[in-house]
Length: 327
Image (cartoon, rainbow, N blue to C red; front, side, top):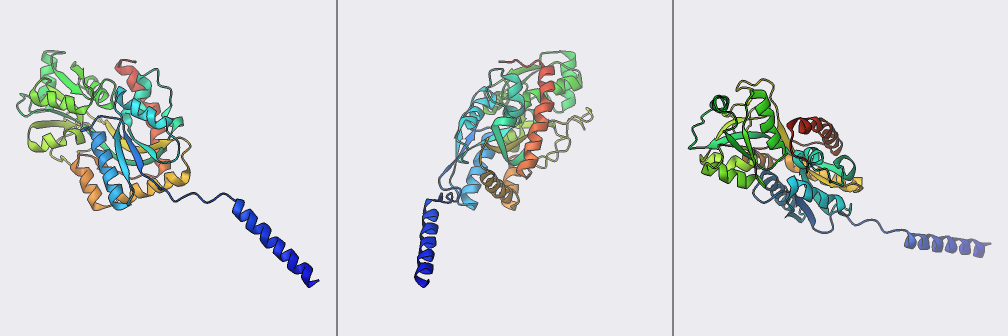
């Protein structure tokens, strides 16, 4: 009897050990290797600046290795497309924003992805208004000066933007409609080329994200005339809003946030969201984002996903009404 009991116990132990050996090993703690953060715009623009700030600070605070990788082109949609095709493991993330996720899909008819289905919202980072600015040597001192000149000579005043169909270009288009004026839009391949031509006077005005223009504004080389958000920018509290300048309820801003390919495990999404939100709560990160002219704002992944879907639906009509070229 005792021998039978011992044999049964030994057999049970052996079977348990075998089952344990055959069970899949638990996944390695994330991240177990470097993370690539795709930047869908050229170096020097607002998206690039915020992406590198997030990558650097995560490397410092979380001790992760996060590498920013610029993949520019087609209004930011090329970089997004690369992220969509990446393996959903959490090692290929992308800094998306309103331009390439909720506007680009309505502009580029040949896109093969849908941001609401092919990407997973991970963490909102910041939002920023568009700043309407001009060279420090310009004759325009206020937004009212621009409106008066545009009404006197429709179509003669030029403004540069980071590209056709970007949220910044469409902010300019919405401003034209609100003011009842006609400006001449000059699209560039990114924020920096537009900024350079505004500084040299090759274009009369610059429509830009605040982060892209902030350094030149601080240096006094660029004169901000207004910001397009409902509230004044905390980085430039002395600059009026378009609404305050006589165009009530005008409110256009853009957001930036981290996304992953659809199918990325929720555990990974939650880890990245928690680390970025922890980072956004620090005085150092808040100050760094404010210094770039943006407003830090943390969200849960679910909240960010809701924002994406709402804006995706909203901006379809705005793009169609603008007459922006569909490529």
